[in-house]
Length: 398
Image (cartoon, rainbow, N blue to C red; front, side, top):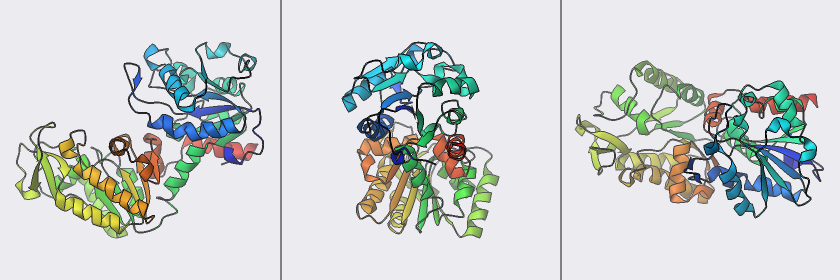
């Protein structure tokens, strides 16, 4: 891929910048600004290069229909304050807009189009829609790695009509993921959570040959505990996944990858209840497993201490209740401690995991924090992402 930072002359160029500003909104207020904060360096870079920036992004899934609740207006207002630069939001139907309508005033540096998913052609990856979007600019930059697993017009087809480049954050994301998939410093450990093993089985199978340790926490760990003959009470778990778990253990044995799961747990009688530490043999039918116990935390800390690379995707427990946040917080702190010594490379991904480190206000203490969700997981699974393929295709044809 060509990187925008290597472009020789961006002076006075109109850059069509695809961002993912799909932030959570509640009553018109942004509840998590992580995705906005991460793209600020790219905007500052382009402003410094004296470009005009035309931004395309989306919020939610309007399915081709205009929705006031899914407007980019609050995001524009938030970003305006952060970068102290006036931002113009175009609400007009995009098919009625022409390039000459843009940047009429000299002081205009950043223009937003309204939610690109208000147009059904976007998710259909429609050719003429992509061509129309391309007509507004001199070059295209994909700074939305988190959308790059989607075959959408502003991510894929558009590269057929404009010189196209990877953004600073997209490049960082790919480089970070390469360090935990191909350019590995061993020993390498994966801490993985979530509720369903079946949704991540292909990721796990792809990682086992590359990793030294895979640590299961959260709901996934409950499935393994049950498979191993332990009671899990009323804890969250996935039905009919015994064959999947057997396959994980069989592959890991052949590949010399150690599978780690809880030795003790914190239980509650309800999600908002108090925590009680229990060994696995003491779990009763009315218990809910909601975090890992102290022995398990110590074991995980020891593995982190002996690792040179770590991938963390999924909290250790129900961290929304502070009584069950200790496991996740201790994992975070152990990684941070090694990071400060520069003796580990750490990649964190997944919305809930990002929420954990945001609670601790330590997002800058990890080597890379991904907000990409589906694209992050599909990359780990070994899939080719359409948006990345499109950028590579562009390099060949230009």
